[in-house]
Each structure stands twice: as structure tokens, then as C-alpha cells.
Length: 380
Image 1 (cartoon, rainbow, N blue to C red):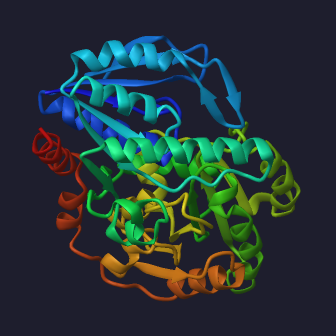
Image 2: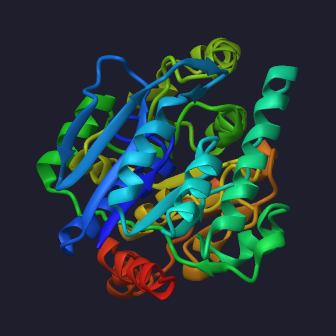
Image 3: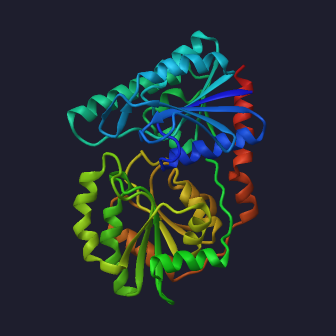
């Protein structure tokens, strides 16, 4: 099957959406499908075309930016050419360009499948309001044109103002997750990189330094945790410098994080082996997200597969990993004291691990690729 995948960002940009798309595209290519990714050339240094893990990647130039959203009229020209050769187009929403691609696909009598990752909530400001309205309209056009709309959980779909209108088309498909237990050398390398000392309590947070991730509540919670566990430290893994559209947020948090001194360590993006080592070194991981731009939180399953419990906010979809496995705590959003209490509680108890073999199989990219194959073919 010839599959055209369209999304705003792809590797090397790092976000939950791009990781999802990359894992799924790679798994479909490994099953023998011809997979082409159409995306932005968000960094002018990136090649316009290359092959990554058997997936053909085609990048188009960005004409200009609205906040952290790239506008790229050239994607419609490239999309028309690639759509004519494709059997199915797979759109990752939210995506401003999705409307044009979806309409062209239907004109060419191609199948359209969308994956709706999250509701879009841009920061305040009239430009962002216009961009948000435009993206929501584009998503509606894409949804109308789609035969099926995949999303991470039914829980999220039933609470999403957008997805509620399309529940008849919605199908729950968990995100593709792969993680392997780390080698001792990888754990040692990450511990050395982070400057960890024996006996320290490690609280992990894996995210972009972005407004919706609720980083400030972990900053506020850490001193409370240290009243009980003075040797507690936070290791923050993920993009934290020059994150598009988040410069003001990072600048606001910088003095507060600086006051924590060596108790807060940034490790940037880690390779796969080091990332699993990071999760294994943690005593607990946290996901204090604030709104529906977070729809699941793949790092929760990754953390649990490494034997580390999680604390997550009580948001649709985000609460599902803890509810599925019992490995963690669910807390109200924007509540630093509840976050601190949940971390302290988890540090003081050891719960048995769930069936990790079944959990691994359930979320394996090969398993998720089979489910997508089914809806790709069903929609013929």
C-alpha cells in the first residue's frame, strides 16, 4: 500500500506527535508499505528530501511563521503530486494544511484517515486567536473528508469539543510505544551526565519546556517534597532551549529554576538507550499537564514499562495510563501541593508491577500498525 503521511513537523523536531508519527511510519514501512512523509522544512538546514528508516521524507519550505506555526503554501503543490501516487493519505491533526490536502485527496478519490492528537490551544493574542480559528476550521474540513478518525482514547474523544461532533467516525487506537530496558553502562552514563549521587531521590519529567506542560507546578512542588526528602532532585529531559513560541515562558521560569540550584537538572533530548536509562533511574516521573493539548502522555507508559510509577493530572486521556495499570497517582491540574503529596506518597510505597509483557504487546508499534492497516483497508 502507498501511504502518504502529512503533518506539520517530523524528525528531528521532538514532540509527542512527531514521535508517534515516526514510530508508526517506520512500523508500516517495516511491514512492506511504501510510506512517504510530507512535512515542513522547519529548519532551513534540513534536506528537502531524504529516506529515514525506510520512510521517504519530503520537506517543503516555510513561507513565514505565525507564532510557532509554519505557513507553507508549497505543501499543496507537493501534496497534489504525491497524492496522485498514493492509495491513502494519513493526516495528523491539528494541522493547518490538512484541509487543502483532505479536499484534494477526495477529489482524487483517495482514502483519507486522520489521527486527532489533541485540541489546539494557542497562547493569548489576536494573531494566535486567528491562527487557532484557522486551524480548527482546517481540522473540521479534514474530519468531514475522513472516513475514520483515530485518537488515543475514547475518554479523550468524549470530552473533546472537536471530536464530540465526529464520534461516529472515531476509533480508539493507543499510541505506538517502544522502549527497551537499559544496559548498566547506559544508566551509569546518564547518572554521570546528571551528576547523580548515591541515595538521591530522582523525580523525572520528560517534556518540552512549554506552557501547557505545567512545569511551574513541579518547580513549586520540589521544595515541598524536599521538606520530607531533602535529597530529592528533578531531572528534566526534553527540549528546553529556544522552543518555538515558548521563549517568554522559559524566561519567566528561569529565575525560579535557578533558585533550585543543583536540585533541578536539564538533560535536553536523550537517545533511546539513554532515555530508558533515565526512566529506570527515576523513583517517580511526573506529567503535570494543564489542558487538552495533552491527550495521553506516552511517557507514562514508557515510565511504567521501566518499572517507574507516574503522577499525572486528572485530564481526559491523560489519566488513562494510571487507571489502566494502577502504577501511580492522578491529581487535580495546577495544584503544586497535590503534586508534591502524590510524589511523596509514591516514594513511600512500592506497588507490584502490572503484566509488562502484555502492556508491551498492547502498545507495540507493530500492533498499532496492524490496527491502522485495518482502517486503511476498511475505508476502500
